[in-house]
Image 1 (cartoon, rainbow, N blue to C red):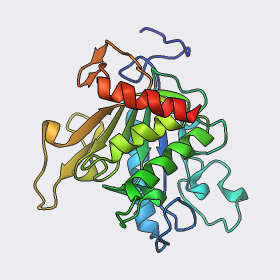
Image 2 (image 1 turned 60 degrees about the vertical axis):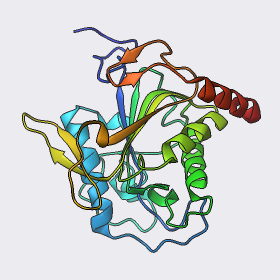
Image 3 (image 1 turned 180 degrees about the vertical axis):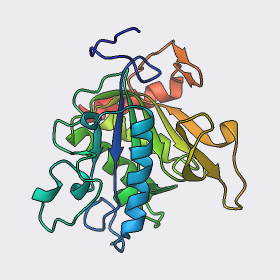
Length: 256
């Protein structure tokens, strides 16, 4: 088996590694001003279980799993107001260097609750500027924890691919100096299900309960930085449109 530049067997389709970031809802942080009510333990556990199913099926070690749910991290019992969590130690806590080792061959799974305006604690049901605000809040969070480049960011979250959140997020990445090959999100309600033969996938349904198939399920947009330009990996086509090139260039100038 071939060994990649990181000294381990390739795991992502781009020849690098898979990383997981589980982002839980919270009413205490976020850039949008609506104070969301606290979510339930059960709601949080959905995100945790989904992330762990993928981690185990793809053999992603704890060193490459991160969570904002502090009591399920390796340092969980040290945090204020600690409560027992049977998943303690299954994730690492986020720090300023957590995502610094990712490069353009790596893949970042983001597990969160979502809607067409954004994900997790950044998501808000008020449409005025929410989509852009949420995109920027997430991009800033990733940059603050070390991310500068990645091959693919794939959202395991509901509805983020239905409208233009992914496009807004690509622009927000550019403004924060993050290079990304592609960004993928689902167009409907997402539920993690086991695949025949092993592994897990997302079953995507619309509001009428109809299961979406093939390209109906998701949207893929090109990220900033011309990562893998001229190369393609199946559905991930390495061709940045002229309009996107101009937009990313202007945003990069603004970031500088």
